[in-house]
Image 1 (cartoon, rainbow, N blue to C red):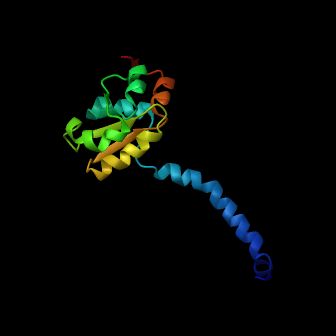
Image 2: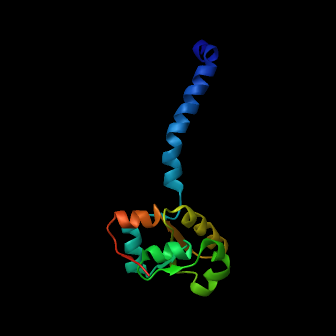
Image 3: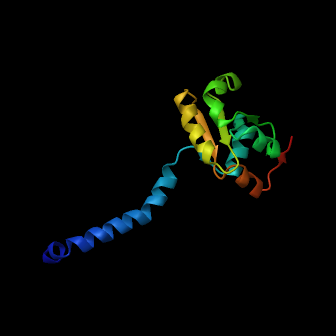
Amino acid sequence: MKFLIDNWMLISVALAAGGMLVWPLVAAGTAAGNLSAAAAVQLINREKAVVIDVGEPNEFAAGHVANSKNIPFGQLEDKLASTVKNKALPIIFLCPVGARAGRAVAVAQKLGYAQPQSLSGGLKAWREANLPVEKV
């Protein structure tokens, strides 16, 4: 007990460092809605998921997932309801690297969509998985 009292600061630093080491694992496990490219393909094939590319039109024209629809992130709240009418369908959001897609999931949840998810790593991860990309 004397050791704990005499070294409380050292113990606090050790606990904080351990917490910082564990945090990325906990955060990655609780990040709802992040899909791998393979999981996205399964969701598209099995549950008829709708793929929404939230990149800008020029990014969409440079390459996109086949049959995906382009709604730039800034227009998502206005156009999502008219693009995906069935709120129970799974939606997969993606952008070139995945940053905007993660924010799009929050917007879709706010609008009442039941199964919005984002593609981890975005179109870059899709290409790295050697999945087909269309160009306009």
